[in-house]
Image (cartoon, rainbow, N blue to C red; front, side, top):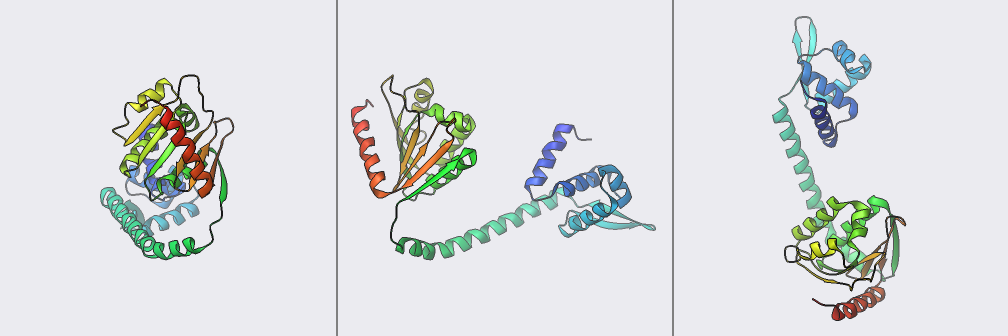
Length: 259
């Protein structure tokens, strides 16, 4: 018998694999109780018999369960979970590979269309954690694989938490991005600076007393500006002129700071 925590972990995993809440409930009931009938599943799950019947048909179609005959009654039995889950994983991997192949095939043409239009500066505003992640996805999609940053590290931590800051660093290393950073001087910033070599980064710290309420990342022809958690916005400016101007500001400060 699974503990409450184990059961919740399994339920969460099955939901992530694409099953609905009711499908998970019925599937787990079959796994726990063995050969199961529609009435018994209805009793265990609290779902109506009609609903249970519909769900078991879906689970059969997806290959999670099959039907057997025991005398005059029909019962539902779970397929081997190991075989089924690995088969599902292989299927999802194959679908992902197909999607990747499609993207690789059409992307050059799409980029030609996109690059052929007259360039117009653009400003986009994002909010909250979802916006924060979207902007970092955009930063890490930059083909130049480098960026400049002026930041208060605590702003990032407060916005998304320490775990996401670690995730950013790991993703940056995995994608072989390089960066230079000017950070507000703090204990956290000094700790990050000690890991510069590990993350292909070079950091210089602002003099004590100089504070950056907001932070910014300069990448390509874009600037991503992150507010504090209180203001809760991220602004992305796509402009060659603005990006170049901010690069000049960065280089001026960089040249005046100690290594």
